[in-house]
Length: 76
Image 1 (tube, helix red, strand yellow):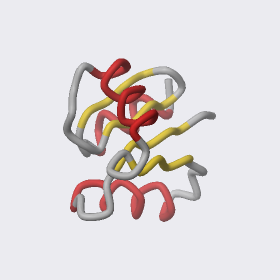
Image 2 (image 1 turned 60 degrees about the vertical axis):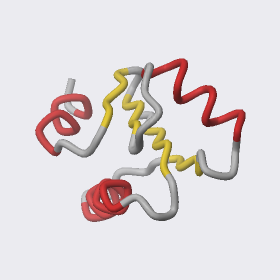
Image 3 (image 1 turned 90 degrees about the vertical axis):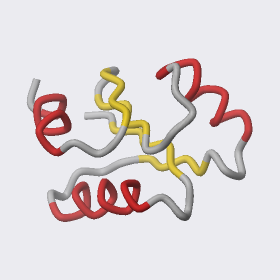
């Protein structure tokens, strides 16, 4: 399973997503788009969005923190 999260340090929903992944022992890679322009550009290309969190779960791109969508993406 591949989980990539694009986030910023002050994002409340990013913290919720990280907590969710940790509670369910789901490994993830986090990129701070506030300090990494290359990753910010990558996030925008993937999602068409500038807001965070953006989650890439096995190639499925989700914007925001929605547990139901995350669970569907993980178990598909």
